[in-house]
Image (cartoon, rainbow, N blue to C red; front, side):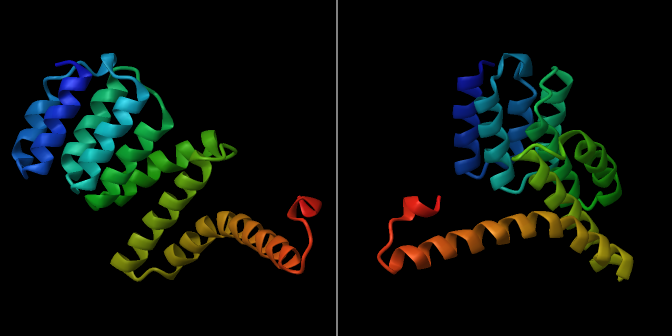
Length: 169
């Protein structure tokens, strides 16, 4: 099945709550023929309906077809977390974290998922160490966001006092 046809049929099945058809539709594709925007759309549609088993299946098909974009692997990890397979997801996320730590998009996403995974472990087991690791995973990116917000607030304040914002950028 061609990517455009798949996306049309997938969207229709999901809109009409024919969730049982998603796996059969996905099994009819040639994942090698999909470009990244088409892959993103397919995964987003499946995830939006919380069909985590089907999301895992789709991400595996794309990965096995040589589609190695980190977004696909990250979506696979999210499907595992959503199915409660935390340790399996953490193993993959830790490897991805080493590879994409400096990536401005994937780095924060991966660290956020690592935080989420440890938070799930804390909730499941009450292990204080898991909570400490979760907070640590979130801390770096929160400090970057906080600095950005603080900087924007400072510029906004200075501009509101009649100054040109470009003076501060």
